[in-house]
Image (cartoon, rainbow, N blue to C red; front, side):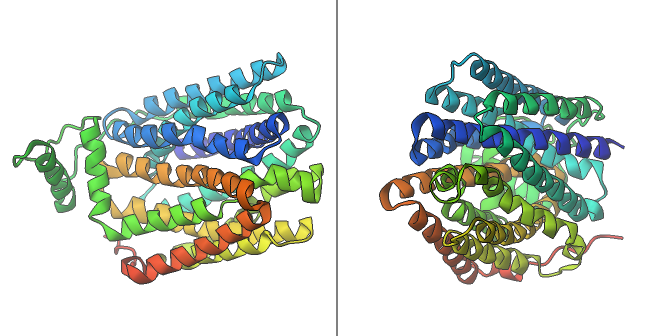
Length: 420
């Protein structure tokens, strides 16, 4: 089954990807001794992430999604091979790390929304929540085992070995992608929501009334149509806005190398990077209840508030085990919010908009933590790592709750009834 092959490929490749995700910031900290430089890695990836996630989502609505995913995956693989080469040759510098982070993020920015748009084509509609829960759980298993294993290498500065593991593991997702069937674009559905979004965008762009064109293109006009659809749909933009608050304000990962070096010891780095994923895995293994929750919007908001409070408490933990436990609690809440956020998007919007909306989704989901890296690095430079960590978590919980109260559409959201 194509979905099973893709699931297997992503599970293995995501495990390998964690070696690079841990090695690059730790290597940057070793080169610079600065959390601010670690935070700049997030900035390096932010612009290509936002631009190419939006553009890649539009392209995914206009071309064979299989071919697009393969091309983007090859770019990611190539950047890892370059990281491996320059590290093995002793040519690494902070600027090169920033540049290669930007290249790798470009490939990720195209591949991620493409994969998100592929899933509804490979499984039945009623299976989408379960597929999202399974995929998110597998990702978090990789984000647990990967950093723990990578920590054994990077604590001894074996960065080249970490990049080699990533390069080898990534070949599995390349195989799975090549085995996918052709996934050509479908005609735009004849739905009122799609027509209104397309026509309003045409009027805004051309100043004249236009009819919906069933032939998909992949320009910035289509990107704007996707953004217009989200802007006109409070449930969607609220779910994304709350996630931005959660990740930008509360994500503490740019502080992990400094905290490990100064508070818990070098051997703690793998545990810090794995802690959030540990909680997500445990939540995912017991996620059968997720499909039975009817008030999905309410569940999303509550989980984000819990995420912020758990992260804040972890920043005050005097011992490593307590910090890991609290971050794991935050990770469990994050798993719940991630599943509902993706499910709402995939079930609310028609297929003709899935690529573009997935592009926006991944720009937010992956861009938010990168902005969070910058916020954490800058805050640590100004007020210290503890205040930067704890204050961000509290702020995230407050902002998420305030958005939900001020704009209650998300709190009231329940999934549409599936046609029998």
